[in-house]
Length: 291
Length: 269
Picture: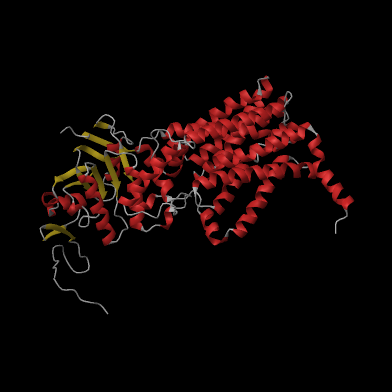
């Protein structure tokens, strides 16, 4: 039997970080970021765009460093950089002038390397590079909270309005094109929202780990369902829970928020994988593959 | 009657490989055209040029204003692991007007009635909530037909619609397409299946980069045209007034043209 005093102490310790404004901000951003990444991650995973998400996050770091260096608002500078990268990656993927994996690798890692070089040479002005790389609850400001809320509302609104177009383009882009859907525009909008989501979650997740936050909730949801609409809300809820739990654990373990949130997602994945049965496992064995 | 689509002297190439050479074609309301030819003969490219998803390098494709297309892909090209039910798959084509999460109850009920009507017509009633992989080959083909119909299409384009289907299912699909044609749709199919499909269509085009022949199966499915199309000798027999095409190559038995058909079959035991 647990003594009342010990239980009270554990309870009190668990809620202690809630006394701090920075933690409440971080927790809110992590929970919303988890939900947002889970939602967009469904499209990323089903279109086999995980590498694009990973690369885009790294690419945005270049914009973060450059805007920090020249004193431009980081959301504006990195946002423009990220949007340009997203459209460039989208164009490469669609037209395939060279092998798309190789081209994406060159574009995004060059941008990431540029960001690292700029920071090493010139340092940063007020922005924490480590927070951008690995996520840090201390790096979350009230502005971050409003930015993630705005991006989430815009993303949910865009998905609601374009739900079937996005589904059609994700499932069968060639037939969607023939059936009158503007596939290039729909792809461009998806990439722009992906860039915005990465930008808004950068301080909590860190650019090196955002891809995991995009992929894990969606893969767990795919393990559990064969219905697209169910997968969307399930991935959103799983993302929110892992963000919430991961941020709390991050404080108590004194580890950067990004890795702990990703580890929370990985633990959920392992449980889902074990308990999903052979039917669930076969669903994720071929995610994004034709045949 | 003004054609829905007019293809005028169209040529197209991928890199330096010519896939269509000076192809001309008209598609009118109620047409039911089968395009036959070997792999790489340009059938799918022509289908995509008709819809506008491929812009030909030479020549013009003129489409009637406001024309709508429904496209049925090859089953082999479908991502069967995608998490989508039959109802979700069919309704994804309902993108006009913009569909929303918060559609009114009346809109949702009207759409559900339309979905039920399409499912019933295509023999898919009771399957709306199944995953697409849980259907048989014939049901999968009919599901994509249902999705194409949900676009309020004027022209149905089908890429190898009977590939991988058994004889009975193939017959059902063909019968269904003929019903849709009788409703006024124009239908264009590509097929390798000369006897199962092409011989039963009102119009056939033999294509091998260029148009080798076009017309009724009786006029087009001749040994001369088929040899030019496929590059190998073909025998054409007649059964119940329909042409029956037989590959005349018998490398194990001797030179071309030595086939004999009998009315009896030996049961191997």
